[in-house]
Image (cartoon, rainbow, N blue to C red):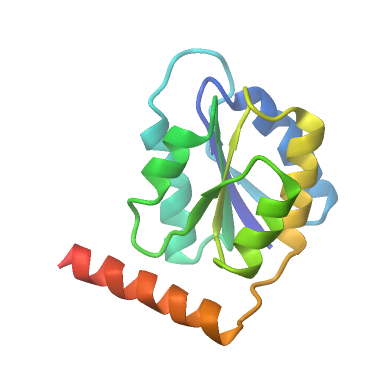
Length: 150
């Protein structure tokens, strides 16, 4: 799987933990930065990752900032993106099974590296259930996006 990943200055250390994990799991990683503590604007990195996911150049995306909140808000502005801010394993599984999330947001200041690695593994390994009620809800989300874009 191709994974686009990006972080701001408050998330780059966790990104540097997640990238080797992704590669170890056999994924191709596209790193959109940042690589240091100099202050940057998280929407720019959310945009870079989400554009790759929407275009199909990446299968999924991972975004990291201090809390994950800013990245998830920015990501969900993009039509076709279903970004979930996840802090536990149950939510990592549920957002894939029920919401077919295609972008994962993490907060470096909220989850430690070990928990973040487990969240990423569960999120990547869990398939969308494709159950009728979940498909209907995804359809409603897609219709809502289309209505809001026009």
